[in-house]
Length: 293
Ligand SMILES: C[S@@+](CC[C@H](N)C(=O)[O-])C[C@H]1O[C@@H](n2cnc3c(N)ncnc32)[C@H](O)[C@@H]1O
Image (cartoon, rainbow, N blue to C red; front, side, top):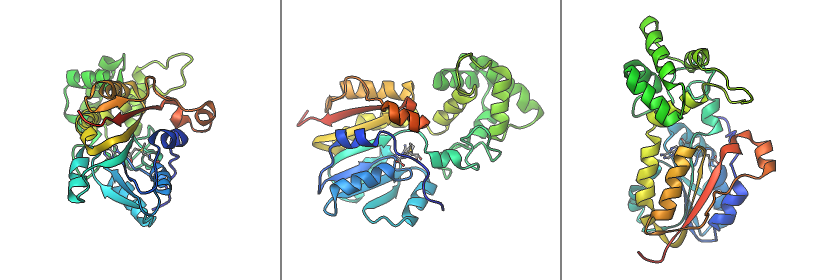
């Protein structure tokens, strides 16, 4: 497996806000290529510990092959962090990072179905060992449910038109690849003037969110993970679209165990946004566990 091509977003800001210190126990709940995790491991030093979770077995495998003994790679959903810590007899951690969404490694792999032009199966699961691939949803959902899904998770104005076209098309031939789906969406959604984003972007986002149950997972974690932070411990979350950011903002303001440290989200610097287009939509929010409820 090749080395990760993912470039960690807002790395300096994450370190500045999480304030990792020697000897601490930290969790990277979305380890991906391990860029952030390595930076955290450098800061906690040999007495510290970094647990790196990812739902994607390929990410865990690639990281394990890199043989970085400072980080323990763990195939798990970040929402199950309570179980991960319980099996290691760790009652609470000093800091927690979530860098949501998908990695450049996943996007670049044509067999995963994340990128518009890939001719492999339209799968889109972070963990291909469980759940349903995206092509199955396109095959089995009725027109109304598809339209609702694309509207709700993609905030796509043309959701009804796209759902109708999906249902018409699948009567003639199954929709099995990302390339087929992106061509279908482009054929029925006008490219908005002055906008550089591909018309298929919102539909792909919607399917990925649905396939991976992303919002429910985040909501569950926002409710229960604060208990796993030691008092004074910090939680940093980088989100990439408004549906996620809205959930994080609300939980960081309202959770009884959390103090919200960022009234407004931290955004990437102009130079980072110019150098790494993926960072442009990133929003970082940080909260701190209070001493007691
Ligand atoms: C944006 S990437 C993280 C990149 C990483 N920070 C780095 O520097 O390389 C997001 C990763 O989170 C993983 N992921 C998404 N949802 C997850 C979940 N619920 N639990 C664990 N990992 C998840 C994805 O498989 C992906 O590898």
